[in-house]
Amino acid sequence: MKKHLLFVLVCFSIGISAQNYRDYLGAGHSKGITVTSSSQQTKTNWRESADAVNTINGNGLDGRLLETSRFLAQATFGTNLDYIKNVSEMPFEDWIDNQFGIESTPLQQLTQDIFSEARQIHISNGGNAEDFDTPNWQYFMYAWWQSNINNEDLLRQRIALALSEILVVSRDSNLSGYGLGLADYYDVLKDNAFGNFKDLLKDITLHPMMGVYLSHYNNPKSIPDRNIHPDENFAREIMQLFTIGLYELNQDGTYIIDGQGNRIPTYNNDDIKEFAKIFTGLGPAEVEDFSNKTPKFGLGHYHARKDVPMMMYDEWHEPGPKYLLNGYTVPSGQSGMQDVDAAINHLFNHQNTAPFISIRLIQQLVKSNPSPAYVSRVSAAFNNTKGIRGDMKAVIKAILLDEEARSCSWAENPTSGKMIEPMMRYFNVVRQIDLDDNDGRFWNNGQHFYRDTGQAPLSAPSVFNFFLPEYVPNSAFANAKLVAPEFQIHNSATSINYLNQVDAWTNPRWYEVLRTWGLELEGTTLNFEALTYYAKDSEVLVNQLDKLFTRGQLSNDTKQTIVKAVEGITRGWGDDVTQADLRVKMALYLIMISPDYVILK
Image 1 (cartoon, rainbow, N blue to C red):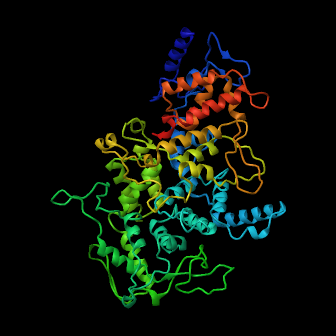
Image 2: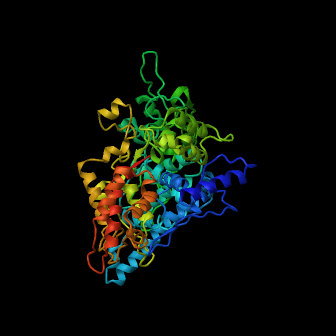
């Protein structure tokens, strides 16, 4: 065998001596070359064979495939192997450009449609129509899951979720009863995901769900005689969490330091009071169909449409000038909406906004501790791409295509990586493993997972999201000057609960990975049929899952542990659950709880 291969190599180098290939044996260039060998391996019941020509034509080399798997782990909720293979054959920038052109199904309308369908199912099963009033959070969740199975708008959905963890509203509040409002807020994030950040900032400012959540809905002007003053909640959070942060930043995200070596605050309490004056006078624009009220300032949010932007009631807007940051004054005599526009434009153009938002998005998509150079490059894209500031398309490309996101050397850097948050792991398994498709419905309230891990879309416990971007888990991280945000929700309870969730998802006999409440509908389970083909050989099976979940980064020790565990399964649970089913369950379970998977490098 070696003698034949050596002969081929000599012919290869002589026959194409006029061409200067700068890559390696196995990368292709096999046209016109015949390879013979002393043996060619085939196995019974396998489609694949070890063809001799594969020694030089590149078949079986998975480098690009694994690189693509890692890229899509950052840019999507997960894809199957065929999709990964297709994307591996194009430049990543082309895939991003293609994604920019894909529209998204309106979640608000889908929520309403699913609610109407569920109501009819309930009535058909003998239920009372009065049991269904208006869509609550559960129907938003049904629609969210339905729109994220078999969809094509993968990047838009991923960016929308990232934005939802920065520009937070939550059903874990007095918003839980308003499913259409939650869905419409998510539509705002999706619709602006590839737009301009300033437009996004204004849209979330005027959204009634944000108005109720951060209490600038019906926020009145000052009436000193009645001890009424503008609410300061949204004014504080639009600065601290949505645009500029607490301290002055350089373009690379590092802190600007004063002469005494201290950080410089971006604002103080007086600034909050001035911004609070800006966000007064906003109230309901329309009322719900069931309401006999008319829109007016002071009308309770129960009656207000939650999917129509708030309108300005100038008689309730704080008059006079507003003194904002860095000596900027919003002049007296403007309308309330002119004041709002001026304040949003002021924050949008603040020097902190580019690095602040860049860091938050990098942490969501790629890594917890981006280098200053990485942040600076993304900030530069935010500040000016072809003369435009705040172009989200440019920011997304800068994040996902940067050398720090793509280079293998950075992937191996011990300071790189991030923990994949629990709900992303849930999305991964549902999207990357086949599902039993009973009726085309992929409704899921995700409540069991939410109870176990505290995570679901638009369900953060506070405006500070599920975890703080600056969270430092222990002294080892502190000494290394590293943060690990997702570790804040990784504790003795949630970590064990996650293990139990994975054990249940991968149970081949009965467990529903997607399920509804109270509708007597059959849930959706994982389908192992495609994977059981590989279960004939434990190492082949683990290699397939490595391509999907661990992006080719499964360590040899972990791999051998899983292979050994899979090989130990020698029989099934009867005719309905075979040995192959149990092997897939074991391999998938151990992959999904391994640090090699949970830490995205």
